[in-house]
Every structure is written in structure tokens, then in C-alpha cells.
Image (cartoon, rainbow, N blue to C red; front, side, top):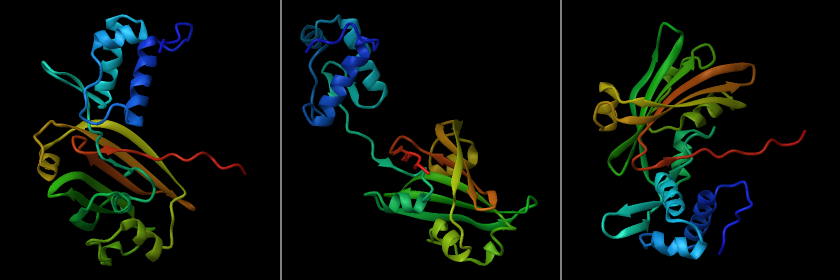
Length: 233
């Protein structure tokens, strides 16, 4: 069980990877206690500070939790929603194990920037978890304000009504603090840190025709993104 001291990978990272593999394999089950720092240090012939670095890393990743006076335990993994894919928010929740209601906060409103703005909220088990504000280029998505947007997949609407499918998306990620409007919509206190994603969708001959600002609570779900390798020409 010795670690590779000749490897450029730090010993604490090697140990963290070993522990993570054991968790994923079910050797350490959810809510079970992992060996103590002393036991791990002896098993891998390393110092306890190195063990602490490894377990600290997995605590930060949300895979372990420390219980005062009891030890370190395997933490239940957060549910993951692939909400950042081109398929859109509705499809992400439909493809997950969770039943979500997508509430229309405001319908398509044409602004001075010649964009229709739509705001929606995702609610899971009565708790709001995501707020998205979408801006549609009015020259591309003509008469969007005449469409029924209630309980409707917007990605499906774009495909079936406007005969468009996105080719690519540009996304930026940041942390934002909840303002008054967001805190009310997501049922969090002001200045709560939230994941903020800005997405610009590019359509054939229509780059940047749909923009979305997505604000996510990360206390209940991990929001993921599936990446696919580039296909050879």
C-alpha cells in the first residue's frame, strides 16, 4: 500500500486519489467512517500531516466530512444536474432523476436592445434552485411574445418553431452575491454566494442570438457540464 515517492504527484494527492477510488468502489460506503489519520499514516508509511492534507482535499471536494469527536466519514454525494449543456434547462432536469417545475417568472418582453427577455425559475420539491434570464434576438426569434412559454421547453420551441439548433455556446462562470430580487426568487438571504453562468448560443449565420444568465444554488445540487471530444473531420 506504499505510495510512489518517486512520482512528481505529491503524496497527499496520491493518498486522496486512493481514498477517492475506494469510496467510488464502495470499499468505504456513504456515511461510513474511514480509517483514522494514525491508521492511514501507518498503512501508507507517511506522516499524519500528509494524511490531513489528503483528507482536507476530499472534505473541500465534498466527498468527506468531519464529525466532531467521531472522526471522518464518507459524505453522500450531491445530486448532479447537467444543466450547462446545449440541450437546455428543461432537458437537463427531464433527463435527471428529479422532478422539477419550471416556472415562468416573466413572459417575453421586448426591450430597447431589440431582445425579448424571458425569466424562469426551476423549483425542485418546493424549493427554488435555479433562476435564468434569457435574451432572444428579436430579429431572429420574431414574435416570440405571441408564443405560449408556460411549461414549455424553450430549446424545443427554438427547434420546432424557428427551425434552429445551436452550433456552439460560449460560457463564462463566476460567483455572484444574491441581490434583493435574486434572494427573493431563490429563497436565500442577501449576499449568499451563488454560481453564475453566462451563456451565449451561436446558431447558423446567427452568432450570439440567444443569451442566458443562469444563477444556481449549489447547496442542494452539483451543476455539471458534459464535454465531448472533438470529432475528426
